[in-house]
Image 1: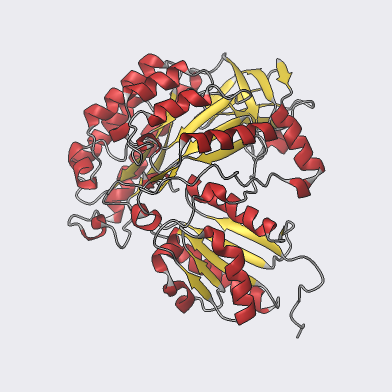
Image 2: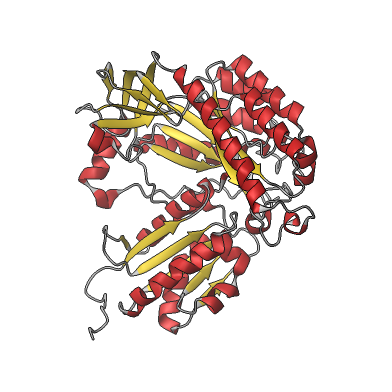
Length: 494
């Protein structure tokens, strides 16, 4: 029998496995920044890391099974590699607390959504004490933007404007795990954006559980529209996106700011969840079909080229055939360019989990298949309207899984549609290419003609530096501008 491998002869390495929504993706960037700030190095592809961190999601029904299955697979790996540690954080850790260590006693650290900054200390404490460390805070220790961050992309970045949520949707467990909404001050957000642009970032996405309620904590209902307009004043910032807004808080000043601010992109992701007023009421979604479609109509009037996407849940408790037909009606009327569709999954701890009228799985599946077929048809028809258009595409890294085989590169159009285009030697991720769309599929566009123009950008330069000096990946901790005053995937949690 081989002796366990030890790691005393080299720097400790880490790997982060992320599940869930954009919030978790951005939190994982912070976890990576914290570990690298503490002297860890990212594990090479295929190598066994010293530390494996699971950043978990609790929104979907199979979240628990997925975590414990992965922990089970990792147990023999840990037993064969002395000194290896396993940490579990995120929403499922916040929810299950001591349950994780009871079911998987080989886990070394459990931490919650409010104290991700504690990870390096907890790992060291677990190593020294030779026992599991469980630390779950009930409220936010510090706004996560103050933490060092290893950003995955040198040309596009998430920027959190709030954490937590004040809504009480009956299907969603997120508010109980991430807490009430806490907003950052506009000056802090803009300072982070300006610092990112100085590093070469071309595109930012404003991130919050409910971005358009931003400002509620400090009593400014126009704060989000004002923030969008302020982003328009940041020199060198070419693209601004945001996710996700709640229809309840979507006001005309936000639509005006989107239309009148040149670097705010013509794309909108706005969760619907259901087209039935009766189901929306049961979900505690404080809008109805008419209001939702009215917002869509006003956005399209102000921004005709806008691509609108959504989230939809099928099979919510008590949903009738008539309720489901109302959802199909909204999909036909709204003509979404794409939709994240979900079969309702019962989450313990949510009001919906104990509601009467739980729908049989075979009924949910049949409705789900019909919805997906309708949305695919609409998405394809909407994408076909793009054929012949000339688009500016921000070249991306890793967006096209078949790029090497098809001799293409990939990127995002201003409206966030995915575009695969003829490979161009001089184009780098972060650069902008001008292409003509030649073909449309339901989920992407193709531009197989010659690239019209390549615009080399500071973002492409930043990508070049990342490739040539991988050890100098972006690691940004925000300067202290003042602590925010205390008063804030899975896509279906909004």
